[in-house]
Image (tube, rainbow, N blue to C red; front, side, top):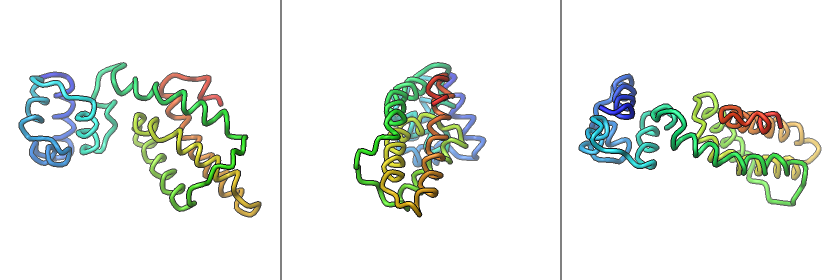
Length: 172
């Protein structure tokens, strides 16, 4: 059994899921899941993400060391850096509805608390840009709430940078 297969099997058993239940939740065949757990088949990145989603965990927890998940986290860093660099420039971009932004910020917070950094790295750049746009578009009365929302989103982005070892970006 491969290390990846062992981790998937262990996580599945910890959640008291059958192979069939996990396969259905991940939208893959039971036969494929069985082969992955046995180590006779290497899953694609999408399959690992689907299995991790079905298990409610970050794909990085299933994979070894600096691998595909870490590469995805590092790939998101330039976009996070660009979003942070432009925070004080009001570009006149339309801000999403506050309810939508609050829901996305709450989702990012859940990803941060669950250490799901690859998911967070994927959503952080756009969420930072949207939170900045909301701050710039807010009225004087709404500015404190918009600033708190931006701070929450920035803290989630900081978690990605810190996890990736980008201490300079984390310091921003």
